[in-house]
Amino acid sequence: MLERLIAILSNYTEVTDKTITEDTLILRDLGLNSYALAEMAGDVEDEFGIEFTDSELMMIKTVGDVLDYIGKHQ
Image (tube, rainbow, N blue to C red):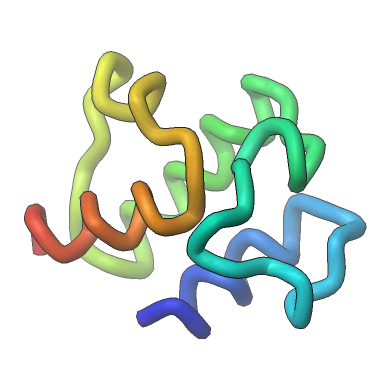
């Protein structure tokens, strides 16, 4: 699951996929703005068959948070 998520994240950042870990901060470390975060969330929703609410998306800080969310809602 991590590899699939990293592949999605890599489309939105200059950060290499080899440096993205579960501890990577989505906004600060990957340099995503709120628009890119929303776009990335849509791709994650499509890939994993889940749906984020706006409030849930704002609570996600790290790649690990996304993985936890996917695990709980898939």
